[in-house]
Each structure stands twice: as structure tokens, then as C-alpha cells.
Length: 74
Image (cartoon, rainbow, N blue to C red; front, side, top):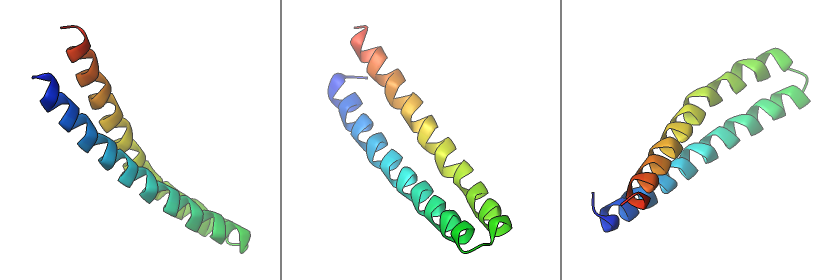
């Protein structure tokens, strides 16, 4: 991959990471609100929904890091 393509790809990955982290943060806020309202069981059920967006954000981070290292090695 040429450096320009890598740069564009990494920018896309960063945007997608932000979107997933924002989704995870909104889920965490909902879980926190439930817990504060006294429904801890429901809060735990809600917070489990952060697993997928966090996994996806981590995967995107790993991909961006790998691309960056591949270009740096050239």
C-alpha cells in the first residue's frame, strides 16, 4: 500500500473507532442511570452491550497500528 492510501485508510478507521466508542459511552451512561435509579440488575444487562463496540474499536485500533507500522518499515 502506498503512504497516501494508508493515511486515508487510517483516517477512516479513526472515525469508525470514535463512532464505536461514542456508542459504548452512551450504553455506559444508560447503565449508570439505571444503577443510580436503583435497578442494578438492569444496569448490568445494559452494560454487557458495550462488549461489541469495544471489540470493534480495538480491532480497528490494531488494524490502524499495523498499517502504520508497515508504512514506517519502508
